[in-house]
Image (cartoon, rainbow over all chains, first blue to last red; front, top):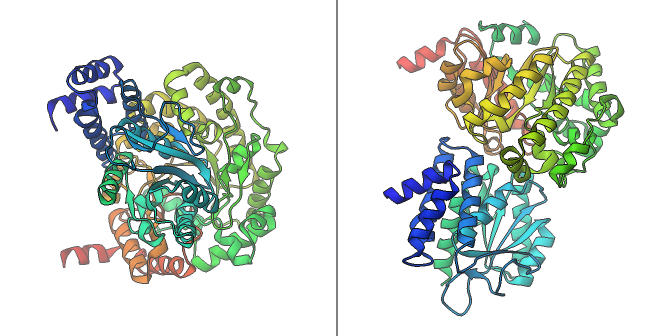
Length: 228
Length: 348
């Protein structure tokens, strides 16, 4: 880890907004998108690993993602999460990474399944947003309703955050519904059941599982590479 | 030894006849009776019969009078979503604007038909069997707000609204104490105090010291019976030295931490309850179940102070009966004191 990333991590964990803003401003002078790759992504990945090892708490992971989200959305090139009806809080109608090239940027959706435990989804949104991605947020839905949204929007990558085992098992229903509709969407899952049983994602027909919100970013990037 | 003697001996940090087994089964009782989960919990007689049958079948050392966590927020007026294959879950948060906390009033236990069903279950179990511990359950005042407010709103409240947090804790502590003592009065032997937000998995240890710990100390001191603090799969090693000050005799520990390390850290001050991985348990065959039980007993069984259980405080509905029987068989085979086999196997 580089010294600037180490300092950025320390400032995130200390919720030191002034230092964070100074550091981002220093990098922005050179390139408006540089803070994302130079500071935010490695810092959030490191904090995610530290959580997995029991060294930092979920509240710190949450606040780090939220702070990064605030910092990045303050950059001149705004990123935003929009809801499942396509209503965002920023400008632009498209999907995908800010500054992405190509005719069709990545269409990413996110949801929970039959569950009002929303923090995991919120954290993944923050990390993706802080990393320059747009994500369409479908909120909380059952498998059939969510499949309908995914097909309607032709979502390429769907992230699912679950807390309870029954919700994790519903992914199987979702996959079946998407298969029946001929919709080839990559399903990326995360949450406690997938952490306590690392093979569960295969059983329910997901394409990959992440242990942390930062893992979601690596999985999205891998999916993006595979699709382009 | 009967189950109560077995448990009291191990909590006294001595070796009973065998390692006590707490299979914390809730929804499986519905399967025993051929009922839906919703219908099962609708009538205390079902739960009494289900718990009775499961104790006999799995040689369990406790009855577990836990219905589902959201039963508490339902008593506060929140929505509950029932499921055919899992615990009833909390619906949309009761409090959507933190200012609403000022208008909240704790429910009276006697006014809630749902809580009354739990009390009737405990009383019915106690009438049938005086020799087996009955475990009642409360959500800690510090953890309940996740269901009352939603997790994100609660984290922000902790950071930004100390006065409202203190007010909410006063309300929740009053309810928690009343609810715990009502269960004890109905016949519960001990109370399981679920406090995942105090776990370092969720909160920084310094935040536990500042917030969750004083709440736990105040609350547990007013509960008129023994208490087990359970972190519902969350870690606790980094705060274990401070847990005795909050008053529990037992702590529920996570599969994420090494049971041997936890046992050494507990150092005779606390009894460990855990730490079989309930999610992975779905896929265990008999050999895997036996291996997991052996491993846990080898790590924490010697000297007493250990109750074998799952790591979350509720075994998922999807865990099959065969696996539960395999766990019970393995406890009978490998959990009988003295645990001489541990030394033999380690020297071999």
